[in-house]
Amino acid sequence: MSLMVRFLSVLPLLLQLNEVDGTERVKGQWKADACVCNVNTTQWDFPAQMFEGVSQHVQSCGDFLGKMQAQMLLTEEKMPQINATVGNITERLHAFEYLKSSGLYQSLHLRQLSQELEDLERDISSTHRSNPTAKTKSLTQEITKVRGDVTTMQKNNMFNLEAVRENLRSLRNNLETCKTIQPGFTSTCSHRLMKNISSPLVTKLSPYGKSYPAGSWGRETNPASPETYWVQPLISGNKHGNVVRRYRSYEDFMGSRDAQDVAVAPSHATANAIQGPGSLLYGEAFFYQCHNVRELCRYDLHTQATVRRLLPGAGFNNEFPYCYYSCRDWTDIDFSADETGLWVIYATKESHGNVVLSLLDTESLNITHTWSTRLFKKSVTNTFMVCGVLYATRYDSRYREVVFYAFDTASGREVNTLALPLEKVGDGVANLHYNPADHRLYMYNDNYLLAYEAYF
Image (tube, rainbow, N blue to C red; front, side, top):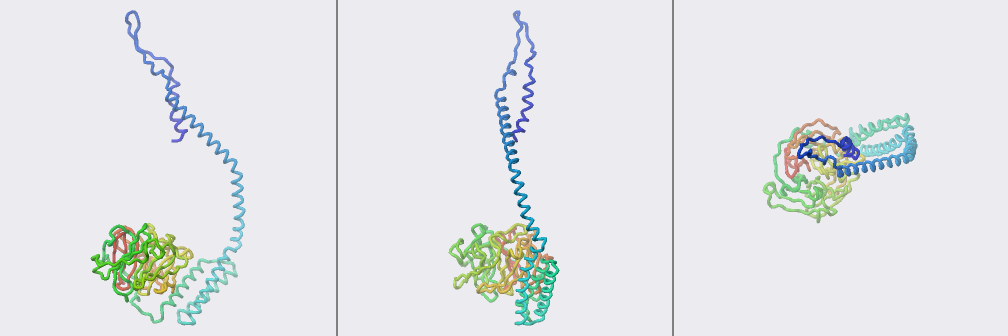
């Protein structure tokens, strides 16, 4: 309650005190030639305590009004300075408005776009010379048309930069497909898209109990490597880890016996420690994001050697995590594997936070090919690769996710109308990936380890 309100609340009491006229009529009795009566004189006692309280309120109101008056005077004194500052900023902004209206701002972006176009022209020409196909010939014709469009834009001072950027993104993706998919290529992935996902075939509490709700698990994803199962929990605020628990067989894993703990780093706070739940076991090497940097780590289970490689421009430390219903911390960089090989899924500022997927050399961690999508990474709960197709999930309820999106690297086609249900036992999905060895999906779901059959 403000001081003024408190003062007004005692005002009726002051008025009541002022209305007392000092008289009172009482009944008396005649005794011994005298009139005897009882008179209560307490109503005429001066209310000293009440008066003191009211006086304090009045004094406080006076002080408050004095401060308000001082602030008003100070504001009036500063207004000319504030007006001058605003006027100066407005005047300075006129120069930028001139640049924009004169087309110079667009010209800077157009120059940047022309450089991207030259790089793409050079790559397409090189690919066509080394491996001429109908597809590379078509790309050559398309890039020539884009060059003509850009020249017309420059000549007529008409700009549609976003349309050209989208065209270049599509051409770049098609070029990557030409480099990756060789003529006559056939595989079990000819059907391309998944049609359904089973109910959980495995539902098991983590061997670490309910202490670590974030982490990853699965089966060795390289079909040529021995069948092993692994679990990697995150500690330190569900962010870091350094131990991978391995099981030699499915029976050992289900029975939680004969486990082997492998330390990929001396502790969870050292340079080669694990960050985030996007880890994966592929070809008897453990792949993960390196501690607190935008770098990829590969730990060889046999030689115990670690290879590190920078992932240029990738967001990290919750810059572009999986979100949708609620953000899942430390999920900026995510490994995935399929019949094509080993992938890393991430986002960059250059891609405006949209998902980027890169195919990796499994020994050196060098990027061999990269595709860009129009899928905003913070709009999904998780992603995974199957047969060269990127899938994305979103939250439906506490007990269900939905696979709603697919991007085919072979055709560049994007679909966001899928509706494949994915059952779960809790809200949070820390890790979700596909295994080409058994065609199953593996999920780390709030301390529970789940596995599903994928149908095509």
